[in-house]
Image 1 (tube, helix red, strand yellow):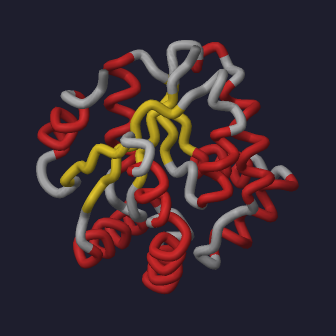
Image 2 (cartoon, one colour):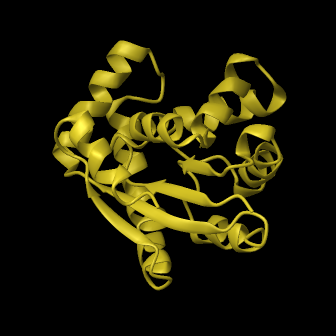
Length: 186
């Protein structure tokens, strides 16, 4: 059975950075739904064209498309020891869709990255300048925070009721944050 760990937090909280480090250290797959979507965009697939227009507005791609991609990805060989989900689930329906596959891929822990909004805006704008990501603009950041607040924050309560939440202070040195996560990774 391959356990799933979820990295949950607002845009720019450092989930992707930490997921890569933790996945490498513990031999797990790092699954970023955002990266999967951006791969489709760069390959100009039909899904990629749809995803690009939606993401450029700061909105989320439909649950059905994301869930189908995720289930397919979890069948890969590198997921046999488990996986870290980065950017999924983002909504209660997505979280409940994971419940449907919990016999094969149970969620064991949910790491909630906590960072104040002012710090996040600065991080995302800097990331947009250095990476060229078209969805890292002030306008789209505002929309993404609103969506996070209304759609994703309720997941904290959902997983808290299952006693799976570990809160992480995601401000500070990357290695210090990593060690704080790693000590809860059993």
